[in-house]
Length: 89
Image 1 (cartoon, one colour):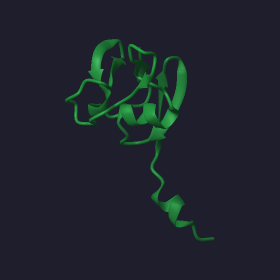
Image 2 (cartoon, rainbow, N blue to C red):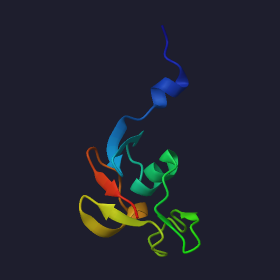
Image 3 (cartoon, rainbow, N blue to C red):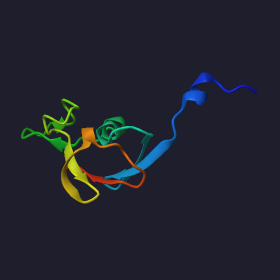
């Protein structure tokens, strides 16, 4: 039986933990993309609005989070790896 095109192009998944929640994303995704896919905000604005990655180039600093106990990591510039622990805030 032939596999469908989507099954042939499907990437392996990477599992990481974000704020204690397991998130699975395709291999090669950035941490910021993982957060966006999971619907997890990186922080809140002063008015309480959820904020996420803005420029996706590492310039604006909107995507900073703690990754593997390292604070202020630009998540748009980091490839998600299996077992990573991310804390937003």
